[in-house]
Image 1 (tube, one colour):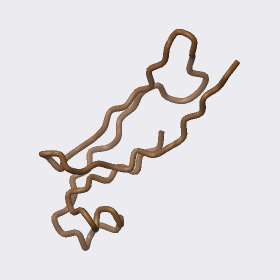
Image 2 (cartoon, one colour; image 1 turned 30 degrees about the horizontal axis):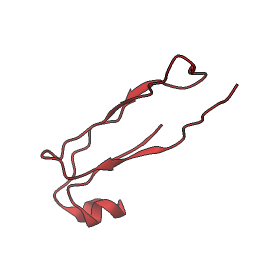
Image 3 (tube, rainbow, N blue to C red; image 1 turned 120 degrees about the vertical axis):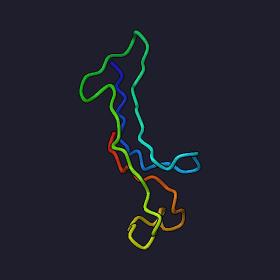
Image 4 (cartoon, rainbow, N blue to C red; image 1 turned 60 degrees about the horizontal axis):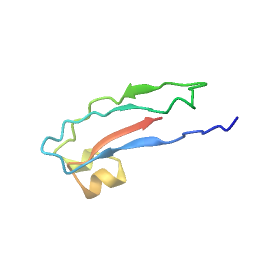
Length: 74
């Protein structure tokens, strides 16, 4: 049987009308697949970027003060 391993991180987002963002995610597969381990769905926390970018340590956020940081593992 073939297996697919998904490893990664939802880093964040920018260029949305509101900077207060979270992300809901889920894994969708056909009938020939089944989840062996882990979560099939989830959500990140809500992040509200600070207007003072000197308080934000993330390098991307320093370049874009409206960048929402999640750093959420999948």
